[in-house]
Amino acid sequence: DLELHLQRCQQLSVTVLTDHQDLSNTELKTVTNSTAPQEFRIRAKLRTYKPQKLHQSVKLHCSKCNSLQEVPDGDDFDFILHGFANTAPNPELHNTSWYESVTWTTQDQKQREIAIHFVKHDEMLQHPEDTLLMIEGGTLKEIWKLTKRFKCVIPVRSTEDDLELLDLSAPFLLQGNVKYYGCKQCSTPKPMKNLSSIATEQQPSWEPTEIAQVLGIELLQYVFIMKFTLVDETGALNAYLFDY
Image (cartoon, rainbow, N blue to C red; front, side, top):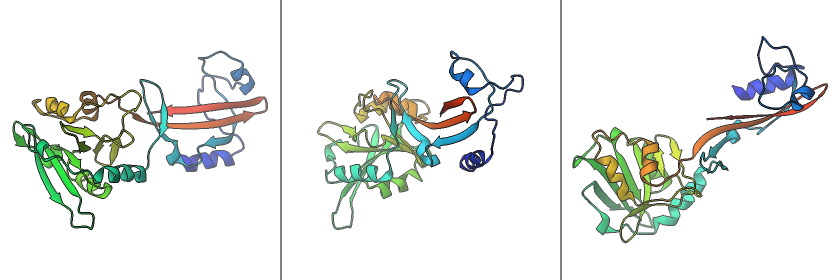
């Protein structure tokens, strides 16, 4: 457990944070006055680390524009879904050559209309564990139920001509318990009909990277970031951890 390890590190008077046994210890003052890149073995105290809570270390990174952003929480996603829930699905977009549609009206007070579009392969529906589906008008709870049974779920909305992705503040794809996001700055979202090119493949794998590519989405990657402040008798050094 990294959090417990970091707490122990703070309790110890001296901690070896990098372990190059073939190198002698270098003072932090020498490290900070040296030009990068070089390899050092240091002996220092851990003064502070950020963020204090490990889950806050996970960010979303765009490799194209190099931007970093916070991972939206479930409430943000739920709010976006509710914003589109009042828009009735367009029946003219149901049951096309590459997906089969099922619609119903909820029994709650709002009586929402929900449409689920199951993408076909060779004009046949795939097994649930291999199926990509698109949902209109669903709530977060309903979407999570679908992700437990089907391979991929994409929240969409109807226009006059085609199905489209929601606002990119929402995940464009859910697979299992993982939400995939696109970069707002670098993405140029395309209509869902572009997915039909994957459906015609011999064995559609529905990989997030391939889905993102055909939908014009620059996929954001989850990264782990931490900042450590190290000190010895000669000075202080900020060390950053950035990893996929």
